[in-house]
Amino acid sequence: MPEGDAVHRLARTFHELFVGRCCQVTSPQGRFASSAAVVDGWTMSAARAVGKHLFLEFSPPPGSGSAPLWIHVHLGLYGSWRFQGDGTFRAPSSVGAPRVGRDAPAGTRDHPGLTLRSSADQDGFRAPEPVGQVRVRIATAHGGADLSGPTRCELVDEEERRAVVSRLGPDPLARGARGDAAARRRFVLAVRARRRAVGELVMDQSIIAGVGNIYRAEGLFLEGVSPFRTGTRVSEARLGRLWVRFCDLMTRGVAIGRIDTVAPEDAPDTPLPGDPEASRWYVYHRSGRPCMRCGHEVAEQVMQGRRLFWCPGCQH
Ligand SMILES: [Zn+2]
Image (tube, rainbow, N blue to C red; front, side, top):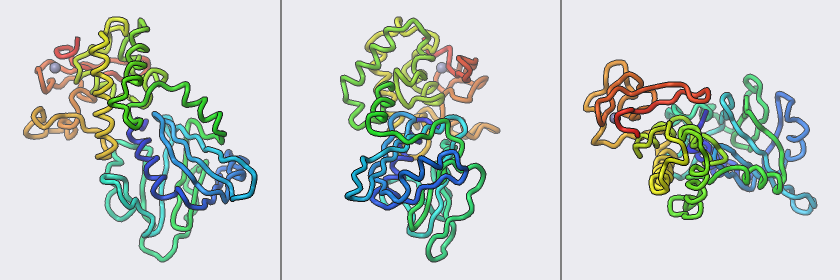
């Protein structure tokens, strides 16, 4: 499942390619047809991410008397967006942002929900036949985005959008989150109030929005916190540092388009045979291998249905 950084990149891509443009909105599969018909021909006016939730705002033509509406999407485990377009359909700025073109789609490897593809150098863009079960197709004159397999896809008004956001914890990728004392405190107090394992709590989207399995493993490792320690038994100071750690790791993920957590001084000089990812993560998907910092074997077990990785030597 894409983590918060991938969804924020997605919002950025929509901002660059669609916002300010009149959009055709359809549902080739049919399941979103009546909602698509409402906003078909409207202009995309905003693209926002909160945690793993994407909100695309559509504004009606002037004088219609209608209020703007949002398409709310949560990709879940199986959802994906596919972008296709002509030569002008590309992310214009933003260092490290996904690009549409002949180059390999930079940074999509950690982001299975994000596929970028160009339909070559022809003049003008003709949308190809939808592949598979496309729930929503959003298209401009130059390109389009196809959504398949989302967990949630619904048309909501501003009040409903706010209700979704109000159920989420603070987002480490919100603007200014790193220095936001109120957001940090909300996270710290929410964890401290619960007698559940902190490894479960940081995956709870009502406590912190956007953290997934990789950031959980790497954030807790880097702060030396055992995932089995209950929330009530992690000090406020440690949780405050953990908040800042998530802000830094995830901001880097947005910037570079992949999740890399290992500091250069910790990276092995040569990649281990059969383990090309060894220099990217400290503990995630490294069970049975020696910890880069202490040499202890990295451990793995299932916690609430998801694989959990940690170093028993470093995390207490
Ligand atoms: Zn270790």
